[in-house]
Length: 150
Image 1: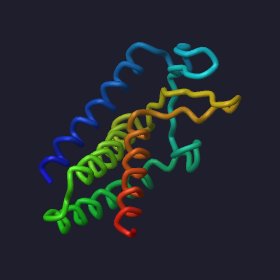
Image 2: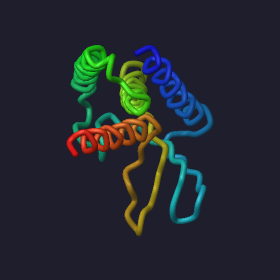
Image 3: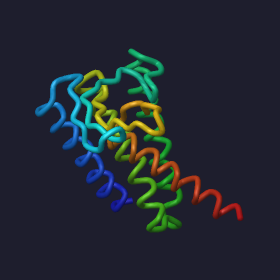
Image 4: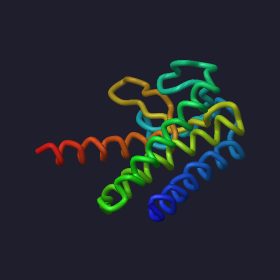
């Protein structure tokens, strides 16, 4: 469990550091093209969830995140004898990402997003490192569940 906390702190730090640079180096709405017609860094704020759903539901997300983290840490504690290195990475990504966006909601009342991709003409919703950590962690969790069932 100690390793999950350590790695979660690293992921939280990376997320918050990236957002610090966006907040201090760019105005809201500014965009810097990194790869033409594919990837921009765009200063954006989100008061909701993915794709902007549930706008202005800050308290809902704060409470939901706290409940989720309590349940997850309880599960990790109960499984502590069986936790693998893969599990450590998986849970650290999810916890780090969840807390990264949680910090934004507590301090800024909105989430700082900036990773802006256009894929095959579709402008994908702007997101951040915390979102990426959560998605990769959930993907790893699905792989773990699939392997355990087969």
